[in-house]
Length: 216
Image 1: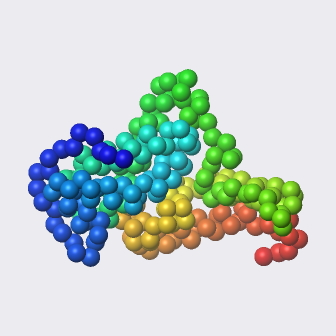
Image 2 (image 1 turned 45 degrees about the horizontal axis):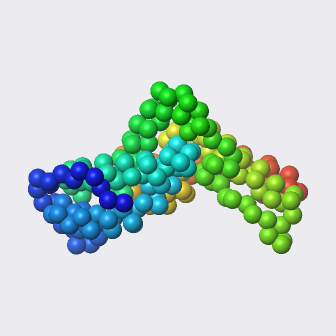
């Protein structure tokens, strides 16, 4: 993936020897496009997974991801290293996806297909269950039902709890990165994730108990 219409950087970013991303950003701003390609390779899958959870249309994910990296490239001179690079890129990806969703709503023909989601397309806390020799149709169905309950529980969470849990469990961010992204203290992040896990667990436990016949 190659960025389009690059802009000349107005200045030099401060280097951080212990931060490989910052070094790649600095090299890119200095004119080394190959350095940016390394950032794309490193974060492309994470960006695509994030976008996939927002638009839920595999046909649009690549386009939105490419637009995300193009926007990031053009704005790279604004990145000053006061946050993690992925945190900065995450915000660009979210804003780009939201822009696409708004545009889709203006086109009913496209919107109907692009905005539609199915149980099999929702990646949030979702695993593709394929039968193995040890699985029965009943166990596969039960696993899918549990995944649906988990998804429903996640969607019912307040926005701040849902975001914190998603960033931790789906995006694999550290507590420190989540605190930076959500602009809140570390203790608040831990509390939100704990409360979110408790809420999801409360929804899942009855189904597990029903299927196993055991109490937790």
